[in-house]
Length: 320
Ligand code: GDP
Image 1 (cartoon, rainbow, N blue to C red):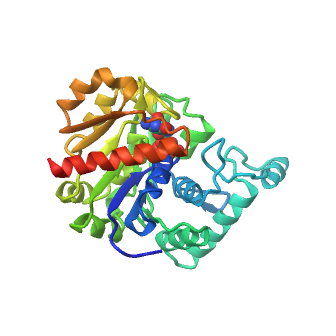
Image 2: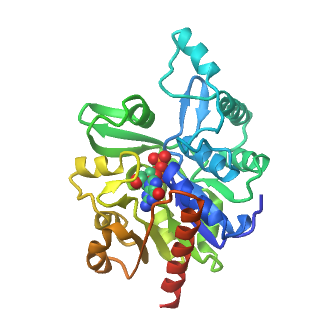
């Protein structure tokens, strides 16, 4: 893993973000790309430290991700889960047999005093990934989801309750005492940085925990590179997951414009899906540079094409 300052820095959650990051990795050299990954989803489960977004990004970049789900490993088996269920254990969160090895080893190394970022970098290296995958912080942050049925730990809301309870807000426990990883701050201060990309991840539970880290938002606004985002809302709906459901429950219009408004004060550029071309005028009033294209990353070519479009937009922001 290289410690050189990156040219491109991407803020990312899990499945949606990882798709674009894979595209970026095909056009930006690994050492020039830093992926800042949300850790608000991380939790202790069955005595293990589980980091779903970091693992999704790592497996995706390593080419070992399960192509059907977008998370977990390809060709995975579930012997451990079956045995656990037969013993009456908690089986609502699936941990595949091979995936389990990673959680066991990460937990051991954390207990031995290593940082999450060092362990993540080492695992990435062992998986053959050259992209810099950096947890947003080495300090624990836990996303809590306020719902009409009470507050839920993130994975209880997301996996156990299948996002059914109506959300009323979010809280990032530990955020006040957490620092953004020093490499993120250094990268944002470096004039060599060419683009900051907010991936089409869930704005509330994947990107907001990163933005809520003390000093991070200021570092983004001071950074000389343009910040560009890609709409996770396509044709009035989320491609996958609860983003649109959350927006509706929070009384926010399920539109790309609402996503831009959510990132108010940060964006110089925005990629809008061609299915939402009718919103272009509205978005142009909110953000200086808008690009329209097919943002549905249905295959590797589409991921690379969107990554190219995003970097071209960042280039336009700089040239303007
Ligand atoms: P999670 O942490 O696994 O939920 O993943 P993310 O937060 O990174 O991504 C979830 C978001 O990605 C959802 O809002 C989806 O609408 C969005 N998304 C997923 N795939 C695509 C895609 O191909 N194109 C676009 N534009 N958005 C996508």
